[in-house]
Figure: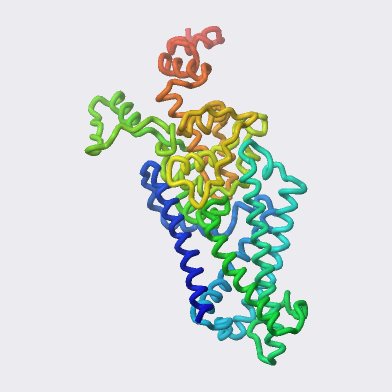
Length: 450
């Protein structure tokens, strides 16, 4: 009875805290502008199955993809055992799913094998981050103390959770052996270690209890750690991919009011639709997080910080300041600064003096976090968008901040201002009158008709 009450208290506390954090994140995302993203349901579900569930884009780099697959599938399958632990904890049963018979044997066998593969994969990931130091995982002004430590915390936690599960299984098997009872399930990894903890029943019961509690408390703590971590993508990847941009990547959005203005210029009979009653004039582009759409803010909570976007960015590769990953992380940090942050605490903030990126003290996303120099380094090639494993649209955020610089502040680089003037005056980017466009053909040889 005491065990059940203790379990219920821990479960209610863990789940309640997680719900509290999700509500905060929802309010943060709703800081963004409203944007209608609907329709094409079948196409969106297909994208979710391929990209979010099937990890399709991860396999552009097979080696880390297979390691990530072990961790991902292990996470999914082990959740079935977590469900069993919840049932056992609430109703005082022991291995409640054991009634499934052979199916339970398969489940436990797969669970243990995947658990071992998760441990191996996590160790390799730790080596990649801390020993071989893969550049995209360790370099860049945004990869400061917290983003680096966050990945290590998660990897070590996953290893501890797996070992707690193995300890529980080993002790449980030995107890059943000493009591001459049959334990449901097959344990291909821990069966050979059944004598590891000796033959004292009270010690084995204690180890089994510690393993069981460490595993379930670890799962609940892990769940509450996620909203403050880049690993929140294991949840956010699914809605983010569902609401992904379905139009061609090179198709830019237009400012609605400017579109109406141009239509009215070209067609005097065009009637500009009236703005909704009470609607406030909207800024051109984005200066701060509330000028971005809710989808762009959702992108920032989905970022895996894997650095694939930055590693393929031609501007970054040629030594420019731009890092698409930093733009996304900056957006999340500014959103939490302005919204409901901190969640449990505010580890995501890494805004320290950078040797390369000199942000100002302005309390806005633009200039306070992201500098114009970073934005103008973008070639709009969409390489970052194409490489992102969770379909984040980094370019749309960059373009909206550029749009603000041009249309609200007239703060485009001098070369672009010259081009804008030429387009306005000559109808082309070049400094020539339209009447002179064919002067180049004056001296060409032509056959006289006479």
